[in-house]
Length: 481
Image (cartoon, helix red, strand yellow):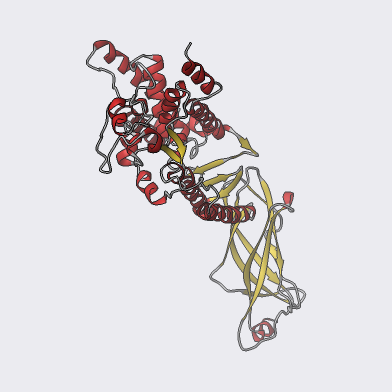
């Protein structure tokens, strides 16, 4: 065995391809996305945006639709996070997290290549199967049927984040009553089939706007798959025209060039680009070209010519890549600020919603048997229990400072039941027999605070609402006596 072969085997010993690491990461993401909708704590999901029940579940806490002010913060975290990842690691989101990429790997690498043998090798993604052959036509139909079944599951999985599984499987038994959900399921499935089977990576190249955004976000320290022309040689000129197709031709011009012109990095690329041409928007940072070159050059006992590196380190060779640079620290700071705001606002969630409206009549005056005069103000309370269990509710009146006398609740006389998610309309009458204000010129509007609470969970479920109590002119009180 030659010294080069021995050196190559030693060099590749213990090396694990990025492609294998991606597969494990894809399995992890798939398992999490399938299991997460089924997990509930105290009846609440990790994330659920229910248009059916007008609820938002976030981190196993339930919010009402009136509390959707949290959604902009979630979207900010999502987009700022993706932009920050792009500045740091290029289009790594596309190659490692994007469902489009995961679904294409499942269809192309598992169904077409491993199961049905339509494609000869995973490492050759440029050569499409010959569908003119009857055998391949039959295999393609089987592949589409298999993917359609998986696309149906994937579409249902997406819907589970707006219609929880426990409701989804009940609704699907009565399709006539849930046409919107069934229609959404069908449309999503058809989209995934047409996209993954027929449109393929063209979606990433021509449709996805992210590839256009990334060019603005990149800087010289952004880490991505980069070909090293200093070691490998310049395969393309400054106008992106190919100069060499064979190693001998390249070495005549650049004797020290190490590129073997095997083009393994080209044939393995899912978006059909040549990484040796330089930075291209189509690159999704899947790092399969790095694997291909590592295998070839590793057998020669040399490091890969394509590395996950930065233009600063590999092309300009002006220093080491700076990961924690000001731009990255800025994204981290913004994410921490937005996450903190979201956490604070989420922690202030109210476990009941209460709207208070006064009736059109300002007040009523009546003389009592003991000779006192009673003043009544009536209100309409609209209360909603946002928890998952029944509770009984009642109120207290907190008068402002400086007012002598008391304002009591005359109606309702006792606590009442409110079921989860149901808005309960209650007429509330506040009364006083005391002289609150002696002003004969005008009615007096007295600010009050209504304390509403769950009788059986007073420490947890309590809200304060500000309202007013209108007290009549004193001459009207005297007249009623």
